[in-house]
Structure formats: C-alpha cells, structure tokens
Amino acid sequence: MNQRLTGSRLSNLAAHAIYEAFDIFQTRFQEITHRAKNRFETRDWHGFQADAAERLELYREVVGGITGDIRKLLDDRLEDKLVWAGLKAVYSGLITGRNDWELGETFFNSITRRIFTTVGVDPQIEFVDTDFETPPTKSHQSVYRSYRGAGGTITLVEQILSDCRFATPYQDLHRDARLAASQIEAHLRKISALRVVDRAEIVRSVFYRGQSAYIVGRMFSASQDFPFVLALMNSPQGIFVDAVLLDENEVSVLFSYTRSYFHVDVERYYDLVRFLKNVIPRKRIAELYISVGHNKHGKTELYRDLLDHLAHSDDQFVIAPGQKGMVMVVFTIPGYDVVFKLIKDRFTYPKKGNRDTVIEKYRMVFRHDRAGRLIDAQEFEYLEFDRARFSDELVAELLKEASQTVVVQDDSVVIKHAYLERRVIPLDIYAQAADLEAARAAVIDYGNAIKDLAATNIFPGDMLLKNFGVTRHGRVVFYDYDELCLITDCNFRTTPKAPSFEEEFSAEPWFVIAENDIFPSEFRYFLGLGGELLEEFEAVHGDIFGVDFWRGLQERIAAGEIVHIFPYPQRKRLKAVDG
Image 1 (cartoon, rainbow, N blue to C red):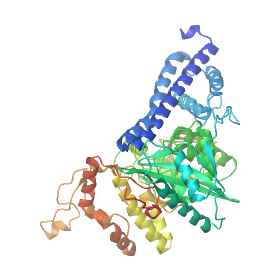
Image 2: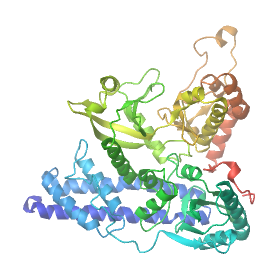
Image 3: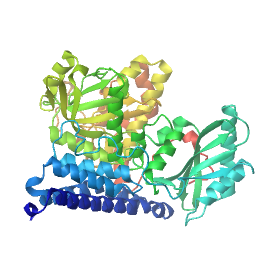
Image 4: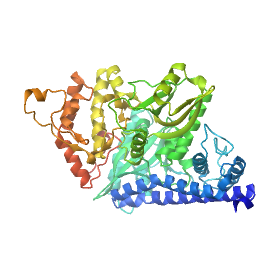
C-alpha cells in the first residue's frame, strides 16, 4: 500500500499519526498531574508515589509505540529524508495552534532520533531550533494572579492562602498568615527594603511533590523584588504552612536538579517556566522544564544552551577535576558547569559489572525519589563536537578509556553515549581545600546525605568522599551510581568476633561474606575521613556505624513508611503545630 502513496501523502499520514501520539501523551501526562491535588488533600502519599512512577515511564511508552507504528507506515521509505522533511513541515503546522508547541517539537525529535542514528543534529528532519521565534498562540489567562498589599502583609498572605482552595481545610489560616507575615517583614528588614509589600504575583497552580504542596510566586517592595514560597503540609488535623522561603538560594534548592519532579497543572508550561526564570534567574530554562516533569524538553533546552555556549566561546574540554573514576571517564568545559560522563570500556579493579548494569543504575536513579541528594543525569547519544576543542592529551585519554564510545575524525569528535550532569566540587577536594569550618559543615552534611538516601531506600554502596560532591549552595550530593542499591536488598551484619589473634588481623576475611552483606562497623575505615573531621562525623553520625540504624530503616521501609525529606533546613520550619 505504501508504494501506491505519494511521498507527500505519506508525510501527511505520518505527521498526523505523530501528532495524535503527542496529544495522547500530553492528555495522559496532564491526567496524572491533575491527581496530585487530591493525593495531597487525602494524604495519599503512596498514591502520589505511584503517580510519579507512572508519569516518568509515560514518555518512553508512548514514544516507543508511535515509533513502531511509523516504522510500519513508512516501510521501505523509513529513512527517506525527503519524506521526513515534508513530514516535519506538516507536523510543524499541526502544532502551531497548541499551547505546548515546544514540547511537541521535542516529542517529534525523540522519534526521529530513534529511527535515524543521527550524528550531531540534522535540521532537515528534526527541530534543532524551535520553528517559532515567539509563541504561536496566546494564553487564555496569565499564569499568575496579582495581589495588592495595601491591606497589610497579614491580609495579603491570608488572601493568597484563601485563593488556594483545598477539600481539606486549613488548621488555622489566620495563624499561618500571621506567622508567614512575620517572616516576610523580617526579610524586608534584612534586605533593607521598605516595611511594606506593594504587590505580589503568585502562580495560579500549586506545585506538588512528595508530602508537600508549594505556593510559588514573588513579592515587590518599591524597587526590590524577592521570591515567595509557602510550603504547605497536610496533617490529620488539617493543612498548615510549614515554611516560608524568601531567598533565591532557598528557592533554587527547592527546584534543585537533585530533587524529584513537581506535579503542577498549568495551561502553558512555556509561561510557567518564564515566570520561574524571573523568580530564580540563575536557573537555566532547561532545569526549570525538568523540574516540572518535562525532562525530555529540558534535555532539548540543555543541548541548545550548550551549543550556544560553544558558539560564543573558545573553551576547550578538559578532564574533570578529582580522582579518576573507576567506571566512568569524566570531562568538562571550564566555563560551563556541566560534566560529560562516559562509561569506560573496562572497569578498574575491583569494580565489577558492565555497561548494561551501569545504565540500569542510572535508570534506577531516574525512577527513584532523589531526596535532594542524587544528581539528575541527562542521557545523550551521538553528540558531535569540533576536534579543535579537544587537546591531543584528552583525545588520547578518551580513546584509551572509552574507545567503544568515542570516535575521533579529522575535524570532529563523536560521543556515542554520555550522561550530562551538573558539575559539583568533589567532596574529597572540598574537605582539603575549604577552611575548617566549611569542611566541618560539609562533612556533617555528608552524613545527612547518607541518611537522606537511606530514608528513601537507597544505599550508596561506595561511600568514599570522592563519590560525593558539594553544590554551589554547600549541599552534599552523591553522583557515583555503579554500586548503588536498595536498602531493602542489603543484609546488614555485625562483624563476627575472630576466634584467634592471627585470624583477626589476617589480610583475608576468615568468615563467609555474601554479595549483599554489609558491615556498618567497617564504614569508618573506608570513608576517607581522618583526624578532627572523622571525630566530628562520628559525634553527629556515629549511628551509621551500627547495624541497628540500618535494620531499623529496613523495618520502616518494609512497613510502608514514607519518610518526608524536607527541601529546606529544619530552622526554616514555622513549627506552628506538631504535624
């Protein structure tokens, strides 16, 4: 039948098929996202977890299905670029009237890159840059509500809370407004602003994640403006304001690349992301799309941002600072805060596993609650860069360690597979280079990171300092995933007492150790800490060296308990109630 169709007719049919698949994806995405409000109101935390997992897998499911359909439809003309050029033109016309046209372009690219093994990019068959310099549609309403502060700060906050209606009532709306207003007024004094808030802009939709909901916006006082976020929680006694975030750094951490994605139901994500960019300007557009669940389009924006950086700089790629990885070779661009991680051809002893097991670990991190401690990685294939960006030494290192992944040509370097992550300072380097007070704080947060991961059923495996990093906000995060596993899959044991002096100090263990056996008492010898920093760590986090801590967590997880990891410090909590 395909042979009887003209190329233009075939392009038209395929474009409509892809458009319909995209519409199905968006409809289902919004349906899942829409459930978040009810999950929060009914305190259905397990239901929210299930929704989050379902939404994460949705893109792959829909793209996989339509890719198979397109293969059958185009048949022997599957790789006919004239057909695809026409297909792209028709599809571009179809999405012109949609509010999510930019997401539609990325959806189209996902299909072409599955069908064509495109090295670099091909503007003939994919949307390298958007087809629309300005939005092709107009929003039916603003993404935010505007408020005047003439009635005072308490009244302003009361109005904002009242407009966010839930089926579950607030415990005490006036009390929470008063407490929040007190925080706002203290912040105004801190930034030397006037004592009044002139106006506020608040996103109409509430942001949901885990066991919290967030009202997000910004406030204005004369010539100054600042972020404004109310963190809401729902206890058996009702909904209450748990924290007020008014600093850009605090809100940036809330939207961090180490957090799971928000569920926020809006008409146009384009408008939402631009509003958020005004609230937290240091965040890339890419990160903001990722933070609200459109990680694939975030990946598109990241790639465009990278190309723009390369076009306006002459920076060369270099090996990333820190100890060389045993599983990954890592390089970066000094002027761009992203690292490129390539899986090695052969892992350094004693590392085990293979390429497939490492890829599966990264997928596990993608699906899991990252608890503010696991860096979100964007997976890319067939990246192409100018050979002149790479020194001979770097090329030699890449070919030595990852020849199955790197292809060097006369004028280009092709990376067949890479993970792109935000660059952080390796903790071992930070602990040595920072002043003692900062090093102590980092080491304490290192223990907090281990505990936060454990609370979400993640065991890092290799807990050496070199596998952790420090963000620009001073938070410690984990980025080495090859030995990561579930806490519930581990067998935490006490170290048996040796029957003799000789066996106790033998180089080889004198008792049988299974693959999943973990001995917490041995951790202190493998952390990479010593002296005062180790003493500081043990004083605060000594419980991780005992099996009771780990077994207790296993019992709580097995019982179905979901531990809430706060995206702000405990000192920020209003402690209005015992929630």
